[in-house]
Structure formats: structure tokens, C-alpha cells
Length: 407
Image 1 (cartoon, rainbow, N blue to C red):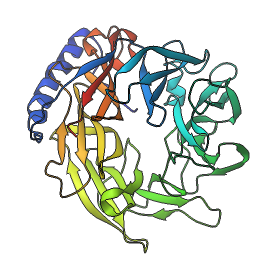
Image 2 (cartoon, rainbow, N blue to C red):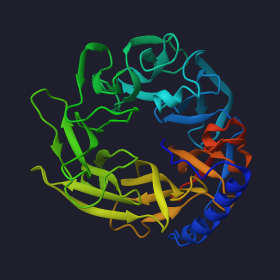
Image 3 (tube, rainbow, N blue to C red):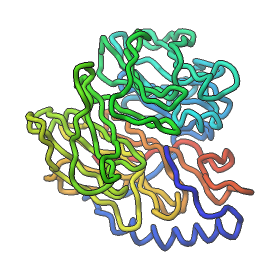
């Protein structure tokens, strides 16, 4: 999750930021589309303040996260209600990643789909935490999820992101090395490591996502003239990256592109990118290498997109996302966007935002009664001293929350 620093963090300027946010966000979010028969909602899923940046496995009905002490955990979700089942927390690693160390990794643990079920990949430091001591780590679960292996080190690397093809016999991870170069490899074969062609090194890790249902990955990169466009790279040494977007607008300035097989387009590949930070733009290929825009969803005035992630439900594609004030990181609301241009409602707010708090890291979990969205919530009024980021303020955390999606 990437953030823009708020205004100077003295008590007076923090108050000013909140008041300014009221002016920016109150009317703007009020102008969002209203979904028939649905109202924004919010309930607390867990009071644990250190349950941050959680990732969900639908096949296991589980979620994973790292707490404030850097311990890696598992939790269980009721597949019918979406309620977190307590006490079902299971400790996987006593020494994984602390919130402070996430400044190095920029990411916590991730699920990876394999032929033997979903497992957990993450960064683990061997020695004083730094890019030079970062190691890729793996914890494997049994088929029924009752037993989990000890942590296994897979080799040097930082901030792994994983492929998500159920039953995959060749699961993959992308990550960065100590020089900030972007790499990918097959999970169980360190010798298969390759550079992500066409992607320049970055000061901090940037996620490179694998395409679900396709042996490829997508990323955004600057082209001639300085604008970022989206590229697709087939996982084949003989292939070069292919530029997919050529239209106006900065692509994924502080987010990442996604590609998946969309059921409403006969399971053809669909690309999602953010444009100028305030628009979701969707493209579909024609099979001959040409990609055309099929839909666009613009955010309310004065806001920006954060953490968009596509999901499918009942034969349609949607996106969960956080919508933030352009000037400040709070208040924030959680939204759902429809991918299909024929959708009656393209964008609707599902959470509250009247309390001026920050909501971040939305994650969808599909229950028997429809999708719910989990997210973290922070109270920026509790920041002290020179703090500028509620999500880095342990006293600001209010725990894990959830909202019904309206689907």
C-alpha cells in the first residue's frame, strides 16, 4: 500500500487536514452512484489492532497476516457468514515481518496456489533487516489445513507476489533482489530465476502480478515521453514484453495493473489499469495483439484510487477498491466497481466515511450469501508528534472491519 504524506503533523495542521478533508470528501463521496436496495454499511470483524494487511484464501476459508511483533499467523473464516471464527488463530512463524520492516518489503504475506493447496509466501530476514538480508520464505499447509510446515527459506529475495491458479503444478513468484531488480521464478526451483524483461529497477519493491489463467505477467513502465503504459510479458525466454496500452493518461502511477479471464467476455483476458489515479480503465484483446477499451469508471471529484483488485462473482467481474481524498490520506471509503459497461450501477460506496477515518487494504471474501469486503480502519486524530500516516500509528488502529458488497 502506497501513501502520500499528509500535511505537517502538528496538532493544528492535523486538525486543518481533517477539516479540509471534510470539504473535499463529504460532498464528493455523496455524489457517488446509489445501488438500488443497498446502503453503505460497516461492522467490526475483529478488535485485534495488529491484524493488518490480511490476505484471504477462498479455497481454505483462511486468512494470513503479520502482527505488530512480526509474527506470522493464520485465521479461519466461516464460509457461510464471513465471520472470523475465534479462537482459531494459528502461529506459523515467530519471526517474520514487523510493521517497521514492511517499510523495506512494502508487503506482507501472500497466498500461493499449488497442486497441494494454498500455501503462504513472505519475506524473512536473516540478520539485521535490510534488502541485503531479505530471504524468500514459505510455509506449506496440509490438504485439510490442520497442519503446517516449519518456515522454509527459498533463497535471496524480497516482497514475493504469487500466482493464483488453483491446482497449479508450476506455481510462480515475482520479487525483487537487493539492487531493486524485478525477478520471477518457479516456486520450487531457485535455478529458474529470471529477470522481468523490460522492467527497470525500483528503489522500493513494486508488485508484478501474474495473469490468472495465463502463463504471463503484467506491469506498468514508462515509455518515450515519460508516460507509464502497461506491458505484458509471456513467461518464455524467446518472448519480449508487449506494450498493450497506447492511449492518453498515466497508467498505474501508484497502483499495479491486473489481468484475468472475465466470465462476461467468454473467459477472454481483460486488463485493468488505473489512469491518472482517478479512473479505472478496462481493455479486452482481440486475439491478434490489439487491446481496446471496453469500459471506464471515474472516481468522484477530488479523490484517487487505492488498492484496486478484481474478483468474479455469479458470472460477472467486479473490483474492490479504496477511494481517498486527493489532498490527504483520510477520510477513506471502500467501493465496488462493475467491469461490464452494461452494469446498471458502475461504482458504489459500501462502507461509511462520515467519521473521517482511514480505511485501507480492502480484500474480498465470497460467502454463501455473497461477497464481503474486509479492510483495516484507522483513526487519524490519534496521531501524535511527527506522525503523518495513521496506518503506521499503532494507537490509531481500530481493528479489522467488513462491509457487505451489495452483490
